[in-house]
Length: 172
Image (cartoon, rainbow, N blue to C red):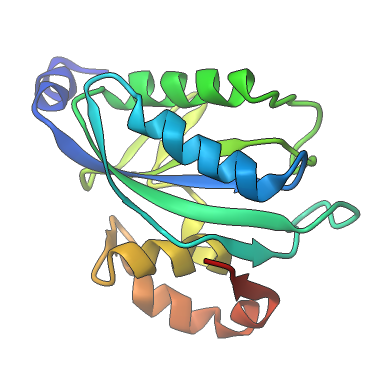
């Protein structure tokens, strides 16, 4: 991270985090994820979406997922935010065996203050978020005018992938 990014991160910014689970009481896992986000240092949880039930993507032979999105105000730099999210995943039993495998809790940085950033293990905006209704539905619920840097409005992308919405159900 360059010095300009470090300076900017000392001032609170808005970040969005995706939450997902399909193991060990997924609804409760995602709710515990919200609670853990509330306890992040130098951060404030501003909004939590409803919970959404969705079919798996990629590896299909696994249980359905519960997905949600949280809006944070944080002064954590992007890498520190990711490290904090990975620590939460570990605390709640996340095992990283294979890509798209079943998981107790998955936390992904989706957006960070309009930043476009790419480094090993961290790409912002999340590189596939604009193609996944299970991310866009909860994101646009808490921020209908959210813009994905380099891609445009999240709600416009949601219209483009309209067929995916039939596989997603709002729970709460």
